[in-house]
Length: 231
Ligand SMILES: Nc1ncnc2c1ncn2[C@@H]1O[C@H](COP(=O)(O)OP(=O)(O)OP(=O)(O)O)[C@@H](O)[C@H]1O
Ligand SMILES: [Mg+2]
Image 1: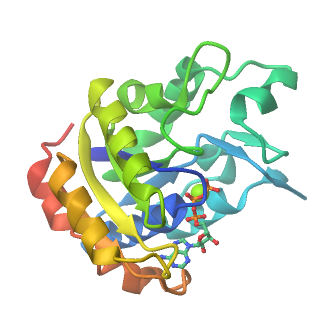
Image 2 (image 1 turned 180 degrees about the vertical axis):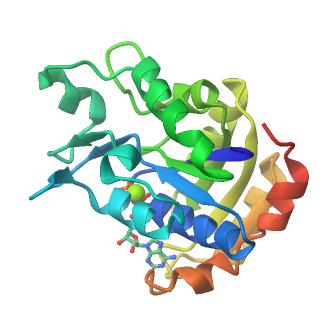
């Protein structure tokens, strides 16, 4: 792996999966091998191949290397509840160490990896670890997806501050217009541009999220590549 990114967001449902897929597409279009992981997915459907989650299936679809469902999503939790509550009833514990071992086994298969978090930055993983420990353990930079809607300034600034304070590297952020009725969208984005100490990688309009290719063209992957040294 040359470089990997942990995709976090200002909340659940702000476009982490959409942005992850668009980034995978953008890197793939530049001729790179791209892989993805959703370490923990809460909210799955029973299939002939076991529990599967829509986010993980989308990530799998936009990776261009051979990965099995289980490699992309090792922990598939049936109910859409906070991971640490969902894992309470599991026979085996879910720890950062186990997830890291899993990632170490697949990371050499691609040049670039997108690892999607669950919920927002501080979501607990178990009683004493949080999802926020994943980027350091996996060796990833962080990309923050800001779901543009009323209240996003506070969520975005708190998230960016927490990411920096935890010693992680915020490689950039994406403005994803999930609510097109938000007032003064451009001014909100400009405010965040001034206050977040990381580059804006692109603005995704409110759009058909099947149009991943169109979304990928709005993201400045070159900027990401020039700013970050290979791991
Ligand atoms: N730019 C956009 N325009 C229109 N709809 C969007 C946009 N971005 C995301 N959506 C829609 O918003 C919903 C949430 O997006 P997405 O699944 O990518 O969020 P998420 O942060 O990954 O959520 P989760 O926390 O469940 O993983 C989806 O229905 C998606 O199609
Ligand atoms: Mg998602």
